[in-house]
Image 1 (cartoon, helix red, strand yellow):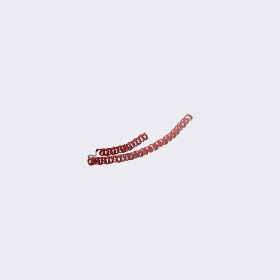
Image 2 (image 1 turned 120 degrees about the vertical axis):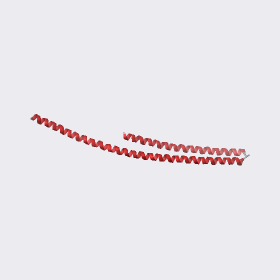
Image 3 (image 1 turned 30 degrees about the vertical axis):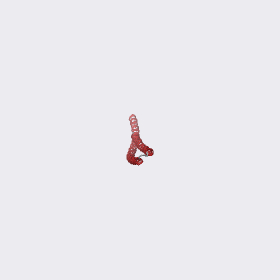
Image 4 (image 1 turned 180 degrees about the vertical axis):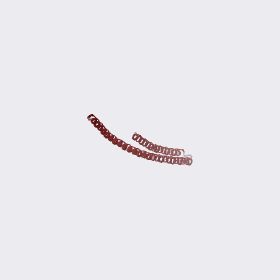
Length: 148
């Protein structure tokens, strides 16, 4: 009978230990679930931010493309205007070859300068687009790290 009591007490002690362990495991499970909920919320927030940045990048890209096209149109118009001016000057000068040569060289120089300015602006605008693409890549990398 004493052995049965001791066995029953041992079983009860093991049961109590299991109940305590079960409580600890349940608390740990609740902590993990809370962390999971927080991680999912953070993921949604990053996804929304990423989407916002993508929209911003697209908008900036479109603005940059519009600016590039406007610069191209202006330079084309300027080039045509300069070309027309050059033709007019050449007609007016006729026999004054030396003077017409000087004016033609000046106009060509202005066209070259305008082209250089266009190239510089185009390079700057494209660098801005590249920088936005790089930032977009960083956001996606951050999102992937968060998902992991």
